[in-house]
Length: 139
Image 1 (cartoon, rainbow, N blue to C red):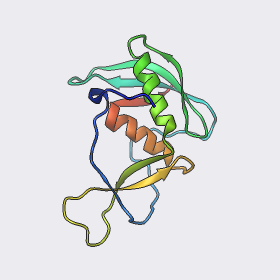
Image 2 (cartoon, rainbow, N blue to C red):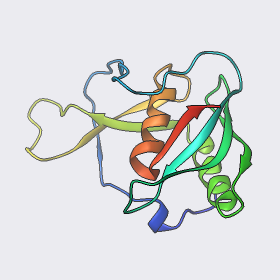
Image 3 (cartoon, rainbow, N blue to C red):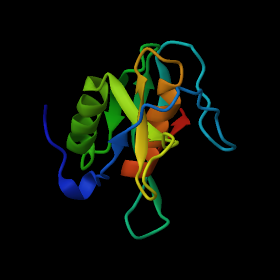
């Protein structure tokens, strides 16, 4: 799998949690996606250190939660190709979860959301926003 440069992929050290599985409810302003196959979305990215938002491409999101690049700004094509390859290759996204009883204070725990779960779409859009400053808006 191609690697994404560290500057484009901030990482956090997280631990898995055995805490119970609970549904993720969309928060106000979050992207709501229909179950329709191959929905198209504009890829908007906030430039580091500024409030400037640029459209860097268009993707299609299928029912199996795979992203397909439709078009991209020439300078962002390689980045988006690598990013989509990475995201489409993941069968699980880990999201922050409540710590189990007796956990040490300050530890961060996660729980897995599988690609087959309905919550995967929201976890995917949250991942794009928090790690890459990317938002998907209906095209």
